Length: 375
Image 1 (cartoon, helix red, strand yellow):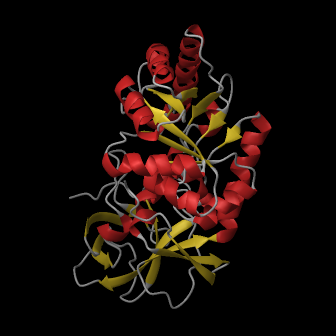
Image 2 (spheres, helix red, strand yellow):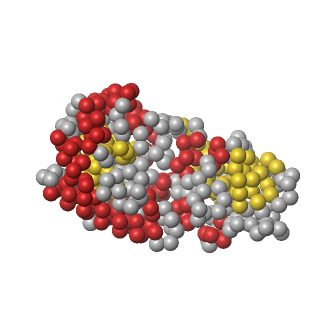
Image 3 (cartoon, one colour):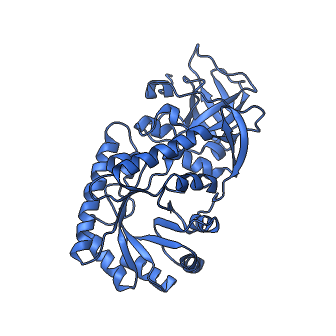
């Protein structure tokens, strides 16, 4: 049976093989600090050149050390997905936070939201009148909200023309309407899909902002967000972008074209633990390290730059089975290889700390401060 396409077949240019620090206990997430800092600076400059604010998504790095670097590079504030992530940022002294999620403020979450409003400049996403009313009851003050718009991803958010109805309900409930936001998640595909998604983001936000203005409400913030579309949609009515994955990059982003092979700042160091079965080798970085994300257009569960013909064909908790075609070289038992994950966000959330390196030398470790803060 023929093997599926390899990363080499799909990506064309071979992924860069990073220099890993010696003596690592594997599996371990390794961050190249030079690449990370270059990625942060490049996105900051791209947004500044377009006159658009940058509010990076904290759900990708989940580390205060990364957030501090993003803010130092000029980010206007930070985005997060959960109340727990916002609490971590608040504890670290970050004052300007947007929860870009239609939060339902029930039980303890309502009390936590109220406490956050006392501590920081908090903004929250809403996409229903019921959620807006519940939020107003929970916080008992005019917290700022942005109405979420569906621009084609079909996940959360209302049609652009309905934005005014939700915004009016939020204002009637006593909330302060800040504007509108969307996420071009449909841009996560190869080819021209990211460009099309960016067009859809801009068009949807333009209609949504007009809907707010027709109701006599401001659309001071018009926020788009996704790494594949960030640079492409930073124009027109858009005042803010919320990319997250750009700080580290991953295999998906290289395939999509939103980062280059040399922009990968995070890899997983993994040891070859078995070559007993012909035509394959097994790594110690299983599903509990590299995750299980595998879009239908991407073969395998990650890429191994040093062995580009290998396909990570299946993962279990602590095993990654890598198939190699006849005649292709494979690593020896005990060899440590770098794995570029398909999707870096869940990888970071699975780690308690990361190794930070420069030019192949470990310089420190960072705690994943918001690990598992999913509520």
